[in-house]
Length: 453
Ligand code: NDP
Ligand code: 2IT
Image (tube, rainbow, N blue to C red; front, side):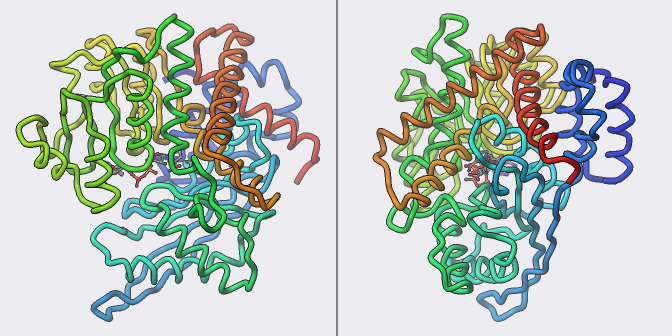
């Protein structure tokens, strides 16, 4: 681990002491803090105004009980969260995650990341995250609906298009956003489209929002490759996960001439040397809500399925040029990074939030692998959410082509900002430093302007 600037080190100790046991939150804070030494040295006014202390303390944290009745008429109790972290740049904005692993510390790490990610987009959105330890897997449609209705019955009073605008994340896609929006509309008697993003196209959603995170990750990677005179043409790519982000990352890699030869879910890995058949993957995952083992079964002997395996192992026996972790936090560790580096990986971009461990990031940096942190590489999702809010505010809807063009421009802008900031601070090519400093200064300047609040 890198050393922290002395003023930041004592602050970090405080974060550890005040947020015991929240390991993912500690990790996310540490990663940002490691980048900020040179900024604090250059701009003592940030430290003098306790900007960092304030940034680490969420503006508001809401924790609530979510009771619902399952199909066997049993009462089920889950925990709901919304951490409204920072609203210096706009209404709180960030997704909702439904996964059994969700704890307060998970939501805090995601909300903290979201502050800097959203700042980096250049769009007027603050940072937040929400979720529940509810597991949508194996639940009936009616159970998911009843859960979403109960969740929103408690959360609605904290939301609003000028206050807090949630969206999807792991376990929350178009279906869940539909139930959440329906209940919000019913409780408030307002058709307030701008209160949630990721909505269906017929009722206020934006074209490209579904594809945006995966597409954006690939656009960002394309920009990084370009700095070394490279393109996706002919590249062999691994994409972990097989959910929303992974699916559309795969689609865009293929459109740009690369081949994704492996993807995964939490049960196992598919290795398909012909390149993943996206239509089949979408049929299995989106239509049937099945497992990727089913993908391999239907491909007969042409694709391998490895139960319980890790996707990065594919790099042991096959050349991997680009790796896009698109599943979950800490899914790519030091050993995985070593495998990828030995295989000749040139670029790694995080479609997921914090998928690489600190050791993996250090190894990529030492090996001069192009590395894009999630807060830059996966910002296309929240950016297109902000475009959805713009369309809702003007009661307009834009074409697919126009919206995708806007997304591409935003991702280019983020790449520029990261690259330029890294150069300005004497670390060309360090996208982690560039993203953290660039995101931080935009939020910090707004906070300075507002005084002590
Ligand atoms: P989905 O629920 O659509 O898909 C998640 C995928 O990751 C699934 O394949 C899932 O497998 C796998 N996965 C989830 N948790 C675990 C775990 N603990 N261990 C192993 N595999 C796991 O979610 P998204 O695609 O929306 O999100 C993926 C990542 O991208 C997350 O980190 C999210 O925060 C991030 N992200 C999402 C954005 C969005 O717009 N949706 C925007 C920016 C970032 P299984 O089905 O077996 O659980
Ligand atoms: O992590 C993320 O950026 C998201 N899950 C998307 C958030 C959003 O508000 O679109």
